[in-house]
Image (cartoon, rainbow, N blue to C red; front, side, top):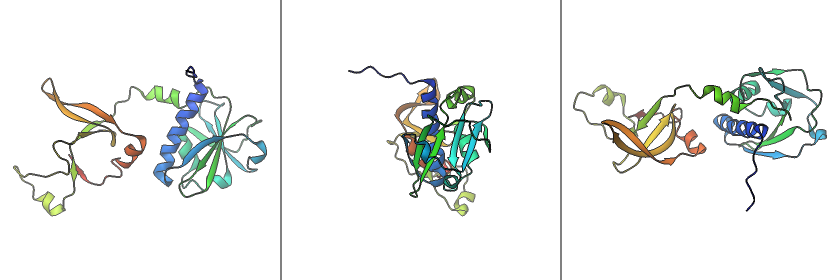
Length: 218
């Protein structure tokens, strides 16, 4: 059996960015197919936009101006959301030799390429570390339903509302509006708790986001 190859901090940072980029683009234009392709300097567009991360001069990501128009979103916003704060600059790098090239096949069909600088001293991993102490709301959802406003306005003490979930179905654990896990409701020292039975996939988290479920939730 071959030993597991230890990833470098740079590889880990780029992998994390690619994962975040996929999520961000899925929200605006459908899920893309992202893969790394060989670098060919001759294939780099003549007119490029260059994005540089704030506080990390070595982090630079380029995209052709024509490609940027296919993203259905502002390039600077997409990159700042997925890597960290940064801005578009007209200043091109002195040398683009050996850069990583990531090809994105958008859900609508076109291909878009991002060129990533070979030297990275910081990235999503560092930014994520700074956020680890931030508290996020956690909600247990037993079910959801839809009600006409007239019925909602007519609720009184003792009213009963039926939900779409059986008592035998797992409950949902939401973090910041996204379903991240399923589990069983239990009692922990006299309080409600949840025993995790399944972790949701990235695609399921997007599909069950609070932004995509326009229903009354319990």
